Image (cartoon, rainbow, N blue to C red):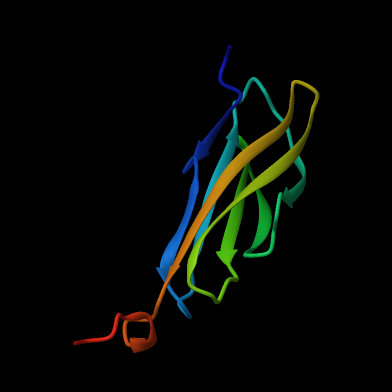
Length: 116
């Protein structure tokens, strides 16, 4: 099967400390022989992330930038999936996996084991 689009990066990783801004942008580029637009973005769970989609048009064609930001304040890992619905019948949805891991702040002694 021919490649229909390029996705970079292929997965979203939001890893850092609690209180830190964690954001990543994914670029989706349709192949010139397979144009499409992204009509909708939805998250499977959605409780730990916010996202925004932008379309950038140029003489070479359109590309899309999907910016995903962590909204979780509690420490620990989480997983989600984003579904991007297109207007092309051959490519109804694009799935993007999201992995987050929020670590305690470096000065947060409550997350460290007791000494002694």
